[in-house]
Amino acid sequence: MDYLNIVVRDLEKAGQFFVLLDFKIQDQARLRGDWIFRTVGLENVDAEYLRLSLPGDGVSVELIRFDSPPGHATEHSDKANTPGFRHLAFQVQDIEKAVEVLKANGVKPLSPIQEFTKTGKKMVYFPGPEGILLELAQYPGT
Image (cartoon, rainbow, N blue to C red; front, top):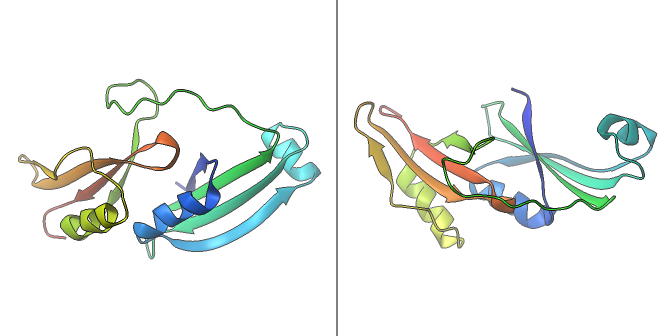
């Protein structure tokens, strides 16, 4: 996978959220011109994007805010059984520490950390920017 693209209304706030998860900013740019019109199939595009990635992992998140043309938000469901794209999971070395960092910054996990006893995997879900559902996961031996 190259990257995951998330359209956001508040680029700075969404970027800060991913920095809390140890993502590093790789690039930021204004997107305008014929090339972006042709690429996304929208006219008069004026947008800004921010690309972040986890060190040494290769996983990147591309956040984009469209100033023009305006988009329309849809209803999001934070329920794990909603059909379609459900959530993004990030592997962490210390899930307890990661959860404390999120809590200290106003992010409330959906539950306490849970353990899948069959594998020993620890996990927790929490809300991310623009209503996306995220998961932190820690595997035994990490």
